[in-house]
Image 1: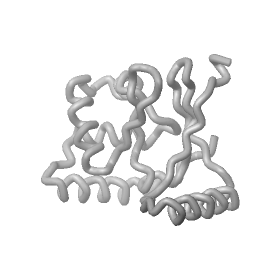
Image 2: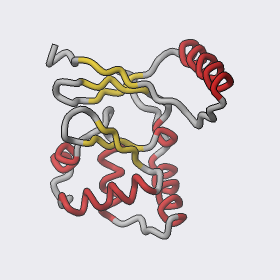
Image 3: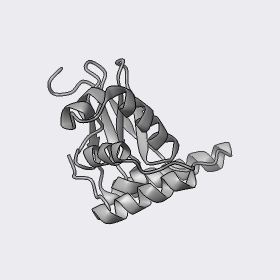
Image 4: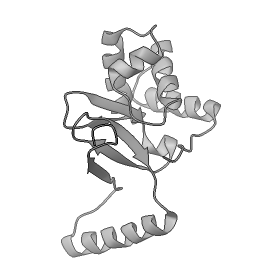
Length: 151
């Protein structure tokens, strides 16, 4: 899997603080801890996985703060076939990527494609939007199947 292209940490935290302020929210230490956990991972995480990585975080606080971060455009919530949502930093903070979603265990992995293939997809999407009158803001590509562990 390709490594995410993160903004320098200081820029990331300045951007997060600005987005939160724009929504009347503060960049609290718990929110910063959540951003730091997600910054250091290469795939979307469940709340349980986030709490394992930073045991100082309380589960109820993590749910509340992830909801705020999601509504401010800092994190993205990914829902799979299992009962657990996964969270990652918003794509504009990490770089464009897609997901492999295991329909057996719910694990989500990031992947990127070549710039040529990405451009080809964009051309195909423009043809679809022109034909349908739909206005696209961006695209996501999720491949759903079985991970190597679930086979």
